[in-house]
Length: 162
Image (cartoon, rainbow, N blue to C red; front, side, top):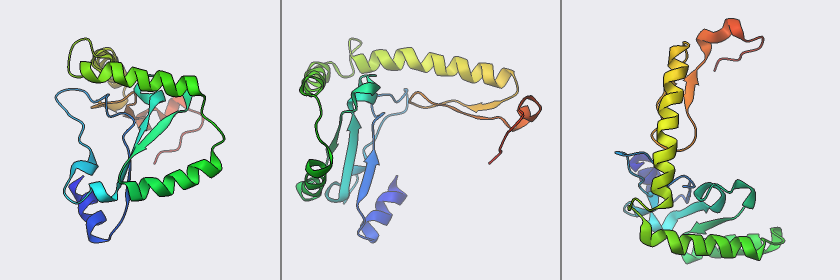
């Protein structure tokens, strides 16, 4: 992350950081916002998502955090491209965040519950994929994992190996 931050600062670049899974990082790993690094707040737009945060992906509601000068440009674009976002979805998301924030890092936290639920499923899937000959990488967060399927060629009629 420091390499990206250094490049942004050195070349006067804006960083758009997709952090929609910030709450789904498995211990002992921790999420670190690139905007918190020296020189990065003034040049970073951090993207969040209600759909990813609260597992309601059909809601299509997100937000951006950043300095006013960068947010202003986004507001101009948004008001001319997005017709509407349903008020009940906005209200539900805002209230959910208000309820959740005081619970952060406690056993009652929704985010902690998600981590406790998803991490063992990922471990189990990695074990199963490794058992059948796919070399899977244990995820450190999120819903996704990656596996090398190249040894499984004989089972596929079409397989592109990158």
